[in-house]
Image (cartoon, rainbow, N blue to C red; front, side, top):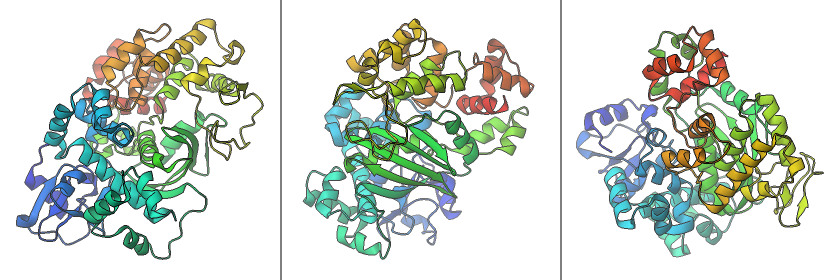
Length: 496
C-alpha cells in the first residue's frame, strides 16, 4: 500500500478519525505507534513514519500507544473493496486461519506457495502472514487480560500462542508491559460475570445508521437463532472450536459487544464475524459522497447518512437464506426457515429437535445455553427429513445439493473465498441462479459493488426515486454508483 506522506501527516495533524485503520503512525523519538486520531501532541515531521499495518509498526520495533489503543482501530476499508489475494488473506487471517492451520494452511486455501504469499503480504502490508497473525494474537491476549479473570497461561493458549514464554515476550514487545501489568492497569474494572464471557468495544468510522441496520436484521430474525430487542441484536454463533452467543448494541463511536464463548480460542474469529455482520470496517464518508453525487440519491443520503450493508456471520447460513428467499416475501422466507430449523437433527443423539422451544437452554452439543444457538450446519441440513422443508421439491433438492457441495468442498463459502470462483461453483448447482449468486456475493462475500437490478423491491425503490426501473436501464444508470452499488441496493430497498 502506497501512502503519501503529506496526506497522512495532515490526517494526523487534524486527528481525523476517518483514517483510523487506513494506516498507523510511528513516532521514532518515543518508540510508539498510534492511530491517526491519537489525541497526543502531533509529532515532528522528522520523527514520523507511516505503516500500512500494526504488524509492520511492530516489526520496526515500535510499541502500541496506551492512549489511543491503535490495535483496536477499525479495520482497513480496503479489504471491503479488494477481492485480490492480499484482501482474501487479510480476511482469513482475521478469521483465525493462521492460528488454526498455520501459514501452510493459509497458503493452501489461497492457492499460492508460502514464499509467494509472504512476498505479496510484505509488499502490501509491510509484514508477512505470521507477523500479521502475531499482532492479532497480541490484541486478543490484551482483551482477555482486561476482560476476564483467567490465568495467564490459559489466556496465552486461548489467544493462539504456542507457549507462555512466547506470550510473555510478545506482549512485552508490543505493549512494553508484562501481562500482569496490563491486568493491574485495568484497575477496579470488573470482568464480566460468567465463564467465557467477554465484553469489548468494536470501533467503526462514523456515521452509522443504527436504525436501518437493526431494522434489516429484525425483520429477518429467526426464533431460536437471533433477536432484536431494546436496540440490541443477539444471536447464536457456530465457531471453529465451539459455539457462542453475542449481544451487539450500537453506541456513539463503537458497538458494545458481549460475547459468551464455549472456547476462548474463538474470540478473534467471533470478533471478525461480528464486524463483518455489521459492516463496521466500511468508509461511509467515501460511500455517501459517491452516491450523493447523483441528484436522485442525494436527498436520501442526506436524510440517512451511514447506511451499511448487513452481511453474514456464516456463508452457508446466508446461502440457505438466499435459496429459500428466491421469489418469495421476507415474511414467507422467515416462516419456512423457522420450520426448517425446528426439524434440525442433533447428531450427538440422532434425534430431531422439534420440541425445543426458542427460549429453552441448549447444551454444548447443539449450541449455547440461554436459548440462542447457531444456524444449522450443512451436515445437519442433510439430516432434515422431507417433512421439515415445507417447500417445493425442486427447492428442497437445491438446498440439499448446496449442502452436499459445501460438505465435499466443491463450493467454498468462507470469508476469504475467491468471489468469482465461488459464483461459478454456485451457478453450477441446480436451482441456484444469478440473483441468488449475486445476493450472496453482496452479503456473504462482502462485495461492495453488487446491484440486484432484477430484484422486485429494488425496482420498486428505483421507481419511487424517479429512477429507471427495468433491469437493463437500471444497470446502465447505476454505473455512476460504482464501486458502491451494494450500498445503493440497500437504499433502494429502503425507498421501496
